[in-house]
Length: 88
Ligand SMILES: [Zn+2]
Ligand SMILES: [Zn+2]
Image 1 (spheres, rainbow, N blue to C red):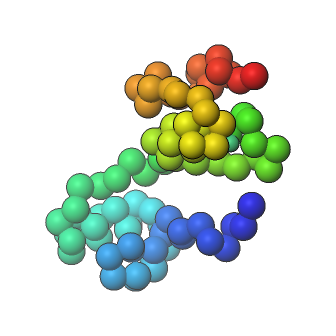
Image 2 (image 1 turned 45 degrees about the vertical axis):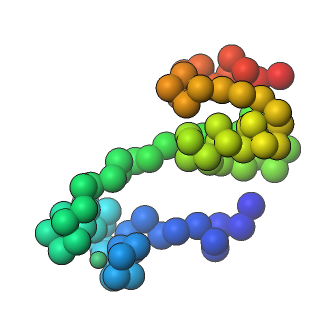
């Protein structure tokens, strides 16, 4: 897992301005870019099937599970509480 490729959550993806906190970035997004504030703590879910322990945003994990592990899950059923249910 390469941490360097992950997006810094404190950097505005629209103008690459860096903020001291996520909440001030969200404030900036609202005021400057007129963007709805994204889920501040977008959960990244660990793929239970990858030995590397890769983490994904929930909708990405769904695609990853389907593409890589041939497992189909509904995004609406995917959360931290039931992630273990499809663990093999
Ligand atoms: Zn910006
Ligand atoms: Zn995986």
